[in-house]
Image 1 (cartoon, rainbow, N blue to C red):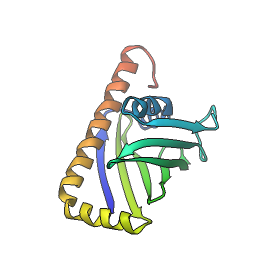
Image 2: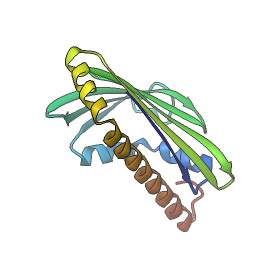
Image 3: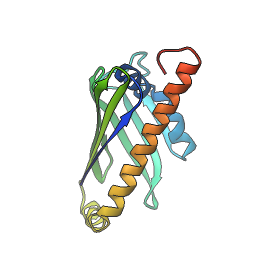
Image 4: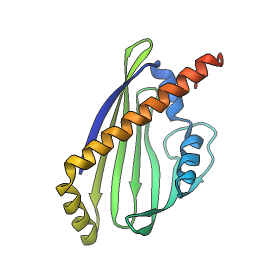
Length: 162
């Protein structure tokens, strides 16, 4: 099942990409939402191969998900591959500079079942596709707003990058 949306941000492409590379913020957010996140290998510089193990409560069960930063092309593309026992998925974040101070962010999610029970779950999700698409677009829009706010805060504090 695929979902895709795009949002325009009032921030330069390099700053948006740098904010997306601040993985510690995302790790802390996952921890606040009840997930256990472990980064395997603490690379100082973001790049392909960074891996996380995420232990979270999802759909009534405890799930272990392995996430790998599989594509990293500064400042335009970041791709993540995720896999659990039942499903696998990819998330691609593509940035396009619309002007010096404006960036379009396209976020694409593709989830595939690996087991019979996951296939049944995906079938029920397809019945609620419109609702799931609306939620996905709303979450990406909120995420874009958060990035814009972080950029504005960084500018007000005199930093050029967030």
